[in-house]
Image (cartoon, rainbow, N blue to C red; front, side, top):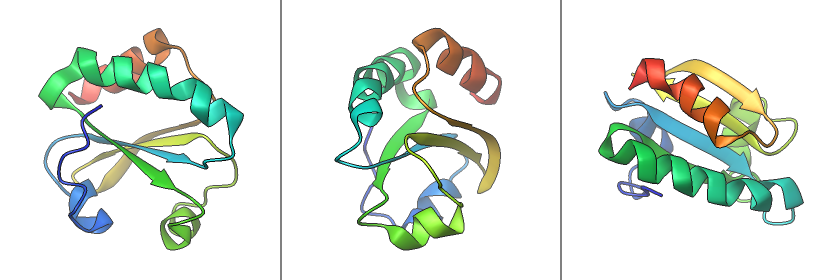
Length: 104
């Protein structure tokens, strides 16, 4: 999974020109743990065309509140700082790939 530039503030990270897929998760969340291999696989398949980052809702409550995260896992795809796609729950690699492909 591409985790480069995580030292950047969240707002700057999502404003980059490349698409950024953010997974809002919790360490205690079993579905989040189940999704981890799928996101790694997606990162391997998309390479540098998609940045994938994880945000722990318990450690980043401000971000979770700002994006109205009510259940985890929730994934939001940002392009140029704007939300272009959002989904909640565990997804298949096929569905994730098809959803992000138009933005790559």
